[in-house]
Length: 185
Image 1 (tube, one colour):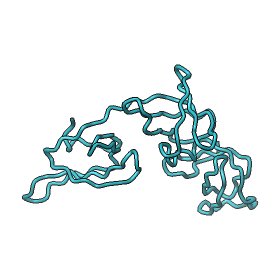
Image 2 (image 1 turned 45 degrees about the horizontal axis):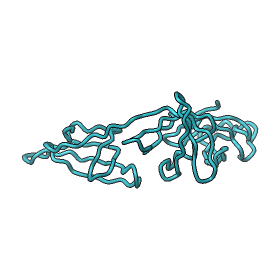
Image 3 (image 1 turned 180 degrees about the vertical axis):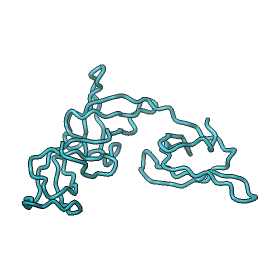
Image 4 (image 1 turned 180 degrees about the horizontal axis):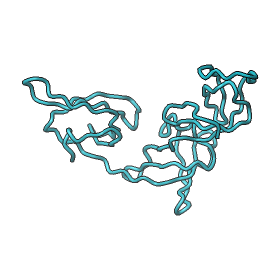
């Protein structure tokens, strides 16, 4: 159990018999009233965001997660298959558990799968992923204006805004947190 005042973004807590990832925390002490902690949290099963006001004296149960490095192998349309990099055991997860992460999964990508009580609950992607551009409009020669972008469809179906000089078949680096173009890979 941790005091509500010690909550930090990224922490996973058990609240109302569900697991929540803390998104943001704001500790307030208004005038002559008692202090409280306003926490914004994401439900790890439903994906919904909630805000809850904890009293400064409240205690919250911190969830202990096991993190295992795995390599993404392939998907068969329904399941996404991963392999443990230490003991080579395979695991399959559904799109419900993976959420938006499926758009960044390319073969041989190493990810961290988080387990709670032996059940996979989420996947932590690397900060950037290198992907191949499958479709984009042809670039204009001499286009060097930095704020002009065009849509590019990646190998997984993800659409990213890229500079005009990027061509089909090129590898680019994408920020997985924001889904944005970073640079050529």
